[in-house]
Amino acid sequence: EAEVAQSPRYKITEKSQAVAFWCDPISGHATLYWYRQILGQGPELLVQFQDESVVDDSQLPKDRFSAERLKGVDSTLKIQPAELGDSAMYLCASRAALGQGYNEQFFGPGTRLTVL
Amino acid sequence: AQSVTQLGSHVSVSEGALVLLRCNYSSSVPPYLFWYVQYPNQGLQLLLKYTTGATLVKGINGFEAEFKKSETSFHLTKPSAHMSDAAEYFCAVSDKGGGADGLTFGKGTHLIIQP
View 1 (cartoon, rainbow over the protein chains, first blue to last red):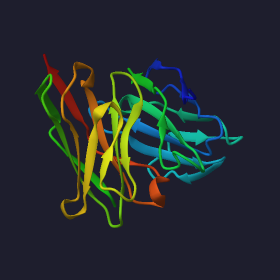
View 2: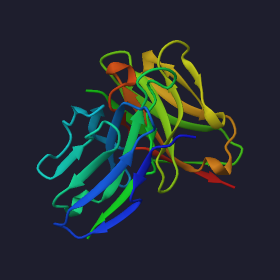
View 3: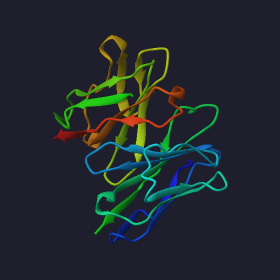
């Protein structure tokens, strides 16, 4: 069964360091999302891609966060510099463009970030 | 902007009892509504969704939910709880692009199953 892959699963870093997370969506899924989930909260959308283009990054803290999806397939989310408040689970999701499951987002296992 | 309210951050039921998790939403247009389940340190798995048509939606693992427009609610139910149902449950709404845009999630309800 096709799945969204994310790595690393866990990341511990010190504040002011740079971190990067990787996501590989389900093959053929044109839309990719990055969400941040703070402990005890629901996920919040950070950025949405349609192929290689950013559709919505209104909630992305652009002073320290960046996201790219250069070839419209896999994606990288970067934080530089990391702050204590960035400790959270970072979830990637993808969605098919057409057909069954068009309006369903499939989530990866997430990357748990701890900033010390 | 849309929003989701999940009543009760923790719900505890006995094994075999009815499960009821409450969700109310606000949306300026007909919404697409979703329930997801999350197990510890894992991603989210879709339980069920309402898009259009029948307001009673059946999902996986015996769960179902009913869309009630007049009450702006989408409560999740299961007739008989199982120990394996213990998890975090999230209600989500999308009112743009028919579910194509990013979802707005509630804060979640932690379901505890008592043996």
